[in-house]
Length: 301
Image (cartoon, rainbow, N blue to C red; front, side, top):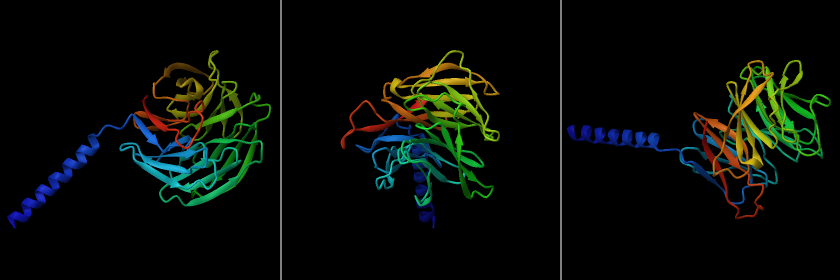
């Protein structure tokens, strides 16, 4: 009996040591994604799980922020996957880019739960944010938002197109891109890549107000992330992330910092895990081939 007890003690000690070692292992600063993948969106799910989608039909990749390991989670089957978010019910919402579609998957199993066809060409459904009662998608080639209702039980409902003609400045090229929401879901924030302007939109009244940046602009603005009153704006071809402190009423904001990192190579979107940000490198200035390398980069906030 003493021998069995001693063995059990040794096994428990070894297990505790292994768990402690894993917890102390530093998160890799750069995560390798599959060659030729052409990533665009990134989202963080439960624990240290992350997801990123492929512009080139490579599907959705699921990986671990701590180990850097991962594998294809959802096959592409010719689909384009762009911006994405995981909601509080464990569902992965994904923008479908030039297909004009949006998707919802079970973030644990990969089961496709819903598909929406928002628009025909020209369209580029670019990013998505999920509040307690709706999912909101941007379209970079149309002055609209697409709203998908979510009832109190989490059931996915009707799709509404919100026309923003005359409410935002709409020019040639990519316009509305990244999207974020306040914690209570009362307002959403969008960035216009072409003009560099930020807008706050009341989700009930749909009133649109430009956020006064004191003369600053955020051209090349792509994915955005709101944490408290701090808005992080990826500026893709500038290889930087602007840090904007917003007023409580979202009427104004100031660019207070810029995050640079030598590993950034045309980042498009970001996600947060603890005190770190993760940016995915789309490498738009590098010709995409089957052997082109792609990465996600860990950044300090």
